Image (cartoon, rainbow, N blue to C red; front, side):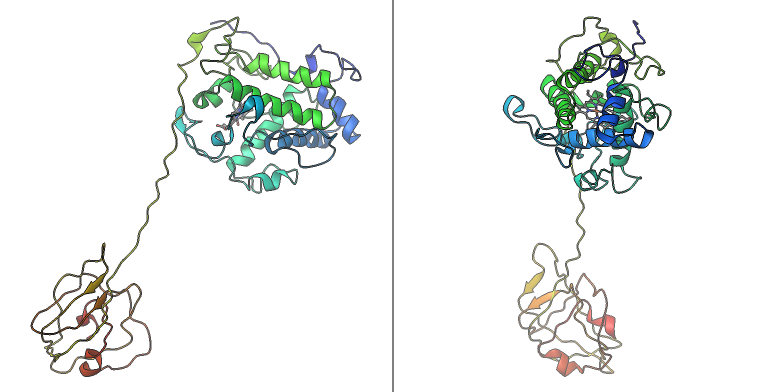
Length: 369
Ligand code: HEM
């Protein structure tokens, strides 16, 4: 296994900017240029602006009039057909969850709203918070922040970018779209073209070649495979060590398993004729099928006997309740298979005669006796 311990910090980028001294990192230089004091808090603010804008597009000043669509927006023009949001919203089984592809919603901390307020998420327990804060720290390292992402809040996420992204099967267009948004974001804050190019080149070199040899990013980390662009159309690294990579596979679409639980109970409407006699209580027998037709239309005939007279207390119309429409006549019996969920209403007595006319009988008559 070939390894190299190349530090990909852009502080070492040799592309000279018109303004930036070569011994000052991109992070430190633009923190001073944009936010005046080069301290940990301002460096963090710079990285928050850079990453949040790259993710959701322009939302704040300072902005020099460069439009940034954002990583979550669908690609247009050369990037027509690119849709990176599906890797972030749980649509795909594309997250590496302890070696298994899983669906994770990384927009679970409020989505774009907190980002527009220069925050990573609304709550620290969200996957969104972890992702965004890791991106701030990681890109702080890449852009050479001397304090934030270094001695203050050093990156504590996974240092193996291949493992993090392996189930996404990112192709060249997707990868280029992502780094273009990072570059546009930087440019929108006035970062000089030479520095924007330096950022783009460093990202491309470090993560844009399939089978690239393991490298240490950050420099203190153990060497690990770093290729993020791993689909068939990605360029092969000159120093390719494909044995360090598993065959790339398209992520599957996550299936939403939702369970609907409903109780459908028939309602009986209509008129019943006859006598109700019960010793000790009347019984209806028969089956009321709740699905697909919870409404039973037809004729019920028979007699219900009660001695002493049945007493109904409360209202027998709990929703959902069995519906039965039609007269009840003749000789038959019926048992409802669903019982009323509850009986509510004022306590009272309903004589069998009253009940027998236009009664709404829910469930088993017997239950109330
Ligand atoms: C230069 C390119 C890229 C860099 C430097 C980069 C960097 C990172 C970093 C540092 C993390 C956090 C890892 C952790 O928390 O342990 C991450 C996670 C993630 N990246 Fe990238 N990324 C790049 C390209 C992409 C692309 C093209 C996509 C495609 C949509 C993508 C999607 C994601 C997703 C969904 C996560 C969350 C994965 C997880 O936490 O399991 N990244 N990336």
